[in-house]
Length: 113
Length: 114
Image 1 (tube, rainbow over the protein chains, first blue to last red):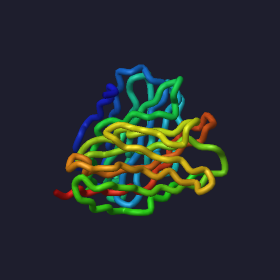
Image 2 (image 1 turned 180 degrees about the horizontal axis):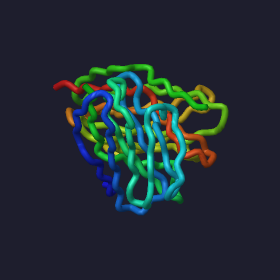
Image 3 (image 1 turned 45 degrees about the vertical axis):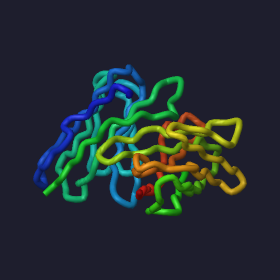
């Protein structure tokens, strides 16, 4: 298994509070991604990173921000959580030579009440 | 932009029977194609991929898929399923350019019954 961990694995938070999810990799891969998974939608890309301090938006980036200050960590922040952001969040990584092949973390289940 | 349509949201199947999961895609550029599997309460695991060459690709756990460029399809098959194949399966595509972004289908839930 690819060395990807996500923390926390489960979180319940209230509407309007900030939330940060962490993805940590031990593979030294260049590319990292944040997806959300919702029933009937599969996985949708929120943000991705192609290097330290290099990030870009995915298809559902509104309400989310990311940061990557070192290769191994990619943080996803919900500045002010809303109930529509209740979801399962997955981090993924891919390498320089096979960037098209992504490996996924175990996921974080976030509930916004 | 790319889009992926998985034609069946739920597929019930008996143990040792064959299964086929259908995936069609739309893209204005050439793509790489993937199937991922998600077991309950776990992350996604790559099942197989089509990059180039033979249109029939074999993956883990006895699964195979066939790429059909004219029909823009990438259907997944297994000749004999086990209870342990109960999972959700996702078809995904990414452009052959340096795009790095996967587009996923909505998923197909396979339930294998004894």
